[in-house]
Image (tube, rainbow, N blue to C red; front, top):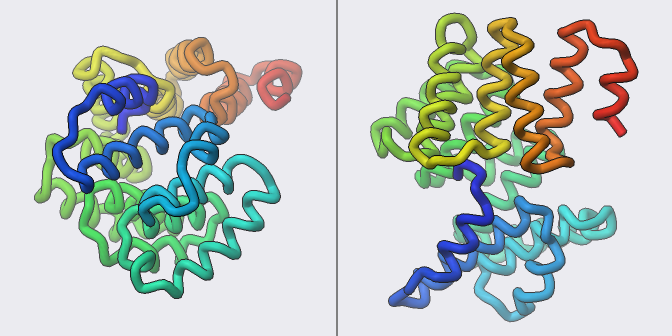
Length: 250
């Protein structure tokens, strides 16, 4: 959840599972980590067409991310599967529906997909959606519900930090400390956490510090999309020449 995807894959591959349910849950996390690392073909090649619905949903997401043709097929398939009671009650499938809907800025569809689920990760996506919809009040309500469930979870901490960035004011500093604490606890500064710290620093107008975090992030993952977007924003706020921003836009 903190963005250390290779570590998640390594841990998953070595984890011992005692039931079919645990095996499926493990495989979902492994393949979603591959997707986060943009290794889409691994997911599409290894998940068979007769796999468990949760894995089929992950495979469909990989196809969506892989190409424009994959996106077209995924949109049609999502509608078809949405009519299937088994798929429609599957938490992973509904999460994938929400992730795709968020990417396409169809926030009402995302809400419809996951509002009935209580898992922390679904809650985190709800926080993202409410913020995108400028419903800070609902985002705060969702964060409180997640805190009651498990305040110490990394997912909940990321939700709190995300909300704090959106709320602004003194909470921006709190958001920075949360991202920093997650990096310290996990002994790794991932692009996800570095971007969180960079966004906080930019909102506090500490642009040099923000640039440093983004440079570190790009040193870890050269083409990380969030890092590139934030670096363009940071360069603009620092009034750097257009040539600098254009370098990251290529």
